[in-house]
Image (cartoon, rainbow, N blue to C red; front, side, top):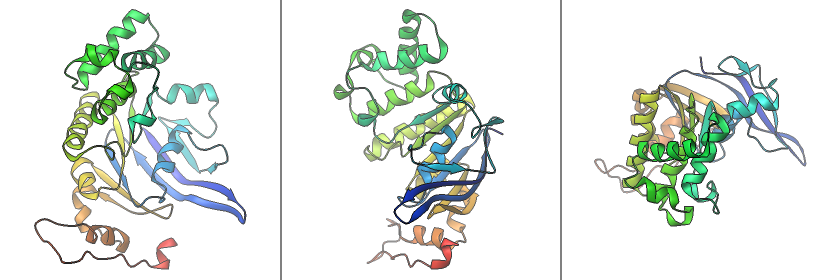
Length: 275
């Protein structure tokens, strides 16, 4: 098993005491594609970042078990965590504009990721960077390698981010809303690219998204989060048959081209969902 989480809790101090941002979350992941969906603030990103221990300094984290490939992440030292972060587990952020270094070329950033985790000469790393740009289906890798982030489109910037994360040959890829800043056509290209790379490399994937139809077609399993908890977990191809009223509410709020309605439904929340 690649990832094991049992009873994860992430808390933040407030003026009135500790507030639970993630509570009682349990899930496992092997070489498969897991989608985590829910509204903003439901705890999706915090759950995924807990695997890499990339939480704000004031966060308080506890769990009965939090492990990556058998390694206890709560008891791991910083040297062990550095080998996992970016090496064995890669994180694709939401918007490449805020993730890429603006004063380094795309090729230099990919080559740096290669050398940090794999070693080797600068020449070897530069050659690997061009190969990785080719793998993420960039037509002119030499030109893109020489370009700075502000010279790249959103789709190309996201491909550079993916190439950086693939440089160490990770076993797990966490994609946190990787297509939300892109238009619909580029979104489809990036998702097909991620799917192809995950399948060919035999990686595990955690895809965080607000897009339920996308997750249902792209992933193997789906975990639905509400107010820091997983309220339902089911096979992706059974998402339309979800039973929890929150999941049903999310699905009923979606517009449909085949069955248009004069007004979309508004979710009616039940206080019992919090418990």
